[in-house]
Length: 148
Image (cartoon, rainbow, N blue to C red; front, side):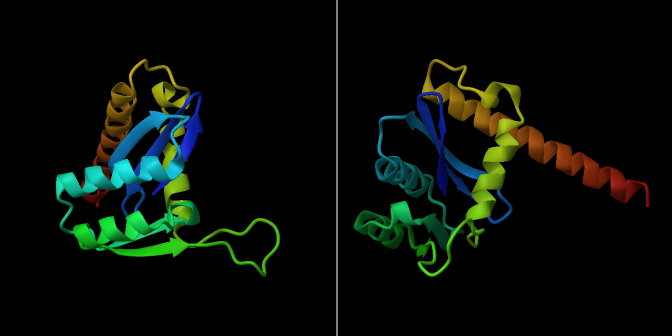
């Protein structure tokens, strides 16, 4: 899970281990990250993500409500924290997955900047971009199998 600041908006994403979007929530930039994360997790609970077992989060989401929501959803939470002993840039385990997803979304013109008036439109374009990305990969893998 993570967020990306885009021109007055924040994108909060719940992704799987491959980086594919499960739930997206777009909020105004003045909404605090933990509050946006809370709304994202409530959406996940409302959708009834029964197969979700473990959630990796950034340290900003290490708050008591997250563990309560995880208990409701039946999920195990692991907070990925920076090591105090290491100085400089370090690739954090599992954190790069959501960052890679933001990079994929940034390659789509409608998502490279915030063009939409409504946050719901931005969320819709995130889902459309992921559908396009998955279809492209599926077609590529089907083509490689058929050519064998």
